[in-house]
Length: 87
Image 1 (cartoon, helix red, strand yellow):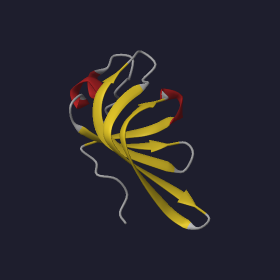
Image 2 (tube, rainbow, N blue to C red):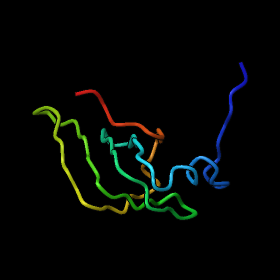
Image 3 (cartoon, helix red, strand yellow):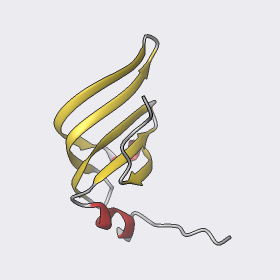
């Protein structure tokens, strides 16, 4: 099985996601779902209609946000069309 690798620098996968819902897995036990409005060369992203899922000692915390600027250094995985973790 041949594995396809998408490089952020080329922007192929991320470019196709602009205007679409994406699921982002972060380094710090957070997952984010939102509509991608844009990104820069460092994969910093602007998202709208955002839901943030965070694992805390008390359980899962869900936060709704209108718009965020996400630091690309903390992204570990991007899932096009993803709707977030199962509740």
